[in-house]
Length: 492
Image (cartoon, one colour):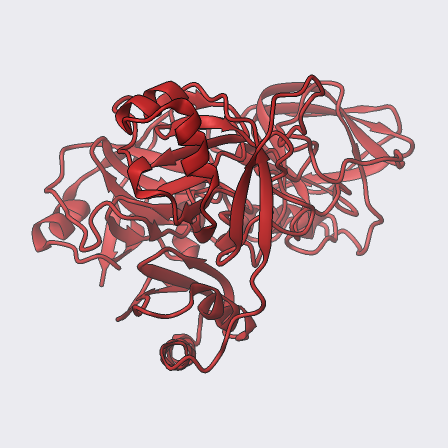
């Protein structure tokens, strides 16, 4: 079954008995689709042309049919060996649960050849199947708040490598000491890869740092913007990455796309050129020559060499945008220049900006207009459009969504916006708690309330989805400041 997933995506059931790798490659080849997410039971495609869903549905139906008939064999499967030091925190506990010695656990875990079933949870995190059934142990009752990067872990029928430090509830068996989750072009593991773990002793040499930022600037360029003060958070964003959601990498992009476009238009840039997204205030100084900047609602300003310019706090905005003529010339990583904080990728060294950072400015490619472009979203407190589904939504829940006034929680971030409000009727998903694809704007129904997924959302999730904000509504929603009230206008 194929269902609309908001206004720019389709979700579908994956037929049994097909090759996930062959399906992924067929979907990636079709020009109707911009991005693909596959779990073991469900998939989703982002449409290249959101205005032509019928054509995309037809293409998807043909590809699924061909995959069932085995008409598109996958490319050659890669075999990958990953060295592991088996000295994890949970090795002894796993041995006790498996009624085996620790050495036997190491042997049982390193003997099989695993297959990458899917990627999700976080960028570059591969779910590996094919382990010894004796080691099929339920996840920990109490998840850790921080799992170290490169941890080799297992839970139930899966094994995986945590690419970056994160919370997690799997049992830690050891460390993949030289594992790099990403190159500048792709993830280390892909759907269908065959993986073997090779035990090795702990060495005194320092392991590879998975958080080592890819593509750091080697030679400084001028002109540039020096950051002399940040109050709150500021980071580099662009119009996002395409083609990497199957690797667990979200599209990213700005919280308010039309605001980024307005700021870039004011300085003559392309709408998605790399700029600053600011939550609070930032002070910048021009180095090596004059620099032209603009915000989403202001005329261009020329900062003379060594002069200072400040973007002051404004509580009427959740995020502000600062574009610079020529764009911010940080390296391209995975096809984009924006910052993905959870994976320490892109932007300026993969992190939020700090005092002392210097941002190279690219070559100006256009002529600045006299004023910023009109925003592409409705200002004020008008109801936000919400498209129900793709999960089946009970009628009483749909009605409650329209009559409830929610408040945007101050704990919200680019990963997701939490909504506070009255308790809602329950909702259950047909796929249970198993992983399903997610897209920006999807609204998950969690035990603690609704979460509207943001640009840096996990590409898979286990909670039911009550609806999706269409693209234009995401801008209107993202523009609302923290603490403001939100109402929804529900459509089928």
